Length: 391
Image (tube, rainbow, N blue to C red):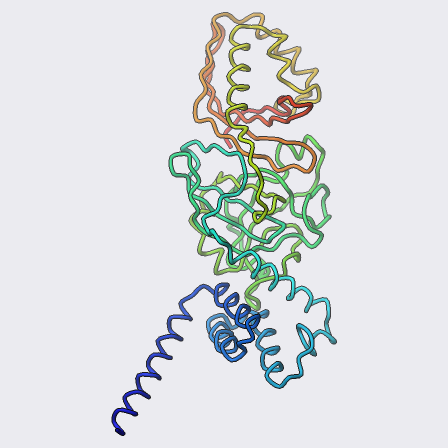
């Protein structure tokens, strides 16, 4: 009987050790959410066990330490509110932790981890990945391009600007809303604030400049060594990931020109998506056909009256364009690698389109990459910006 009891004890100890090993292999955020769920179920002892493993795994996770302190206080029956005694000495910091916990538990656990954002998008083969940031729920999602179809890749908690989103001015400490592209990694040595690396995005882009938005230096970067993560709104406008998450998606971040959509459209909202892709494709085809036909009046009507071409104002550009078209014969245009991206905007529906353009006439021949921003006004799509060059 003694040997049976000893065997059962050893089996129990072994199974608990195996359970702990399995838990420590889980992502830090999953361990945190599990702990928070145990708390909501009143399973304090299990929550303490999970949070202890999380702290062992990530010693600099300050939110985990705060929750651990609350759990120990709760066991004595003296916890009346989140943060306990720490709230009395530093309420703003504790409220930041509370908001982080709330956003993590609300948005990490979803019925369908493979959900796609409700956006219109068509990716050409030259884009291997897409990054989508939902600023309202503090999530950064990555997708792979599978023959033009988005395939879910990963999901991460992200920090945005202290004053929220919709950046317009230098120093406003807001994160921009819009359609951007990743630029190169910053190779120079940076302060510890930026963690394991920093990557530029192309803010201000063409639309931002058109609207005279100011500021620069919007990066995706990591966290300082003394902390695992930052509060949901605590950067100067940059997108901040934990160093762990930054390194997990380093292959994507090191792929220059990866498109990044920064949106205020909450992923948890169920929006009826009106598929505009074919409408836009038809518009682009009509634009091209009227250009080839030298039907200048119809061609130029595709443009907003306040549009820009390579940062040349509309009135200056159309005079030069009219002369070129009138002198040209046998205009032939082919478009390929057409990509369409929803352009998040507070006021109007917009899309950013880019494609490779092959142009030939009796005067000249060229091949260029072209970017257009189309805006919907009065139920009609028109070109607000057009420019050439490789993105």
